[in-house]
Length: 322
Ligand code: SAM
Image 1: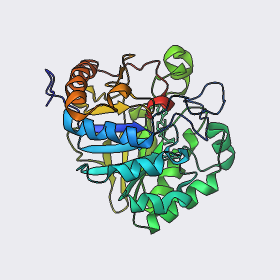
Image 2: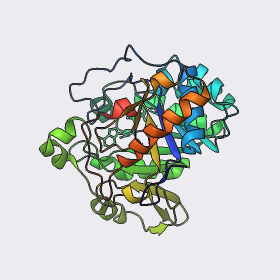
Image 3: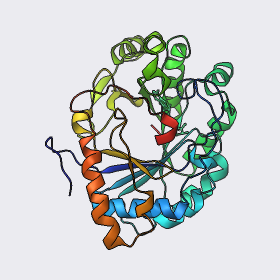
Image 4: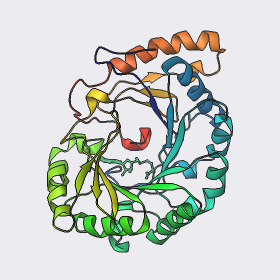
C-alpha cells in the first residue's frame, strides 16, 4: 500500500467516463459551448481494467463514476459490465440527471444504489441560465423515479451570489420533503475561475454565510461524518440532513483519499495540482508488467496532494469530474 507522511492513501477513485456533457454550466464552461468527447477517450473495458489495476495497486475501495456527463457516454454499459467481480465496496454515480429516468434500469442492474444529482436551482429560467442545456422537469422526474426504484439520492448545489442564492432555502425545503440529502458545494477556483479571481470572489458563498442563511429558516446541529468525508453534515431535527463541501472554508486536504482517472487515461492525485500521470499505455499490458509501473506513478500522484489547503487549479472540472 502506498501511504504518505500524513498517513494518506488512495481509497476513493473517481472515473470520468467522458469529458462530453449535455450541459455547459457557467462555473465549468466559460464560453457556454457544449463539450464534446476527446478523440482519444479509452474504451469502457480499458477504463474498467484501469479500475481493476488501481484496486490492486492502490487499495481502492470505493468508485464514483462521473464525467463530463457519464450517462451520455456510449461506454457506460461496457464499463458497468466490466466492474463485476472487482471487489469494490461501493459504486456510485454523479450525474446531472437529464437522462436518469432512461438509464435507471442499466444502473440498477449494475448494482448502483447511490446517486449524486447536480441541481443548482428549482427555477426553470435560472436553470437554463446556469446549466445552458437540458430541462429542469426531466431532472426532477429522473430523481423521483430513482427514489421510487430504491436509490439513495444526494443533490449537489453550488450556491453562487447573483445566480442562485435565492434558491438555497427552496431547494433545501424541496430536498427535505422528497427525502434527498442536499449538499452545498462551495464554489471552487477551478478552470477559468482559477485564472479570474474577481469572477470567483463575486460569486463565492462561504460555509459561514450559508449557515447564517439556513439558520434563518431552520434549527440545525452538526452531525457526525466519516473521517475522510469531504462534507460537513448537519441535522435538521425531525426533517433530515444537509451537507456542505467547504473546500475553501474548511479544507479537507489532510484527510483526502481521492484519486481521479480521466476518460483519456490520466491519473490526477489532487485537484489543485496541474500534475497528471498517464496510465493509458499500461492498460494493455499484463498485470505483472502493469502493476509495478502503476505503483511508481501512484507514488508521484500521492505526492501531488496539497498539505493543508485547497488552492484551486487550472484543470477544468469537466475533464476529471469534480
Ligand atoms: N455531469 C455530472 C454532474 O453534473 O454531476 C458530473 C460532472 S460535474 C463536473 C461534477 C460536479 O462538479 C457537479 O456537482 C458540479 O456542480 C461540480 N462543479 C463543477 N465545477 C465546479 C466548481 N468550479 N466549483 C464547485 N463545483 C463545481
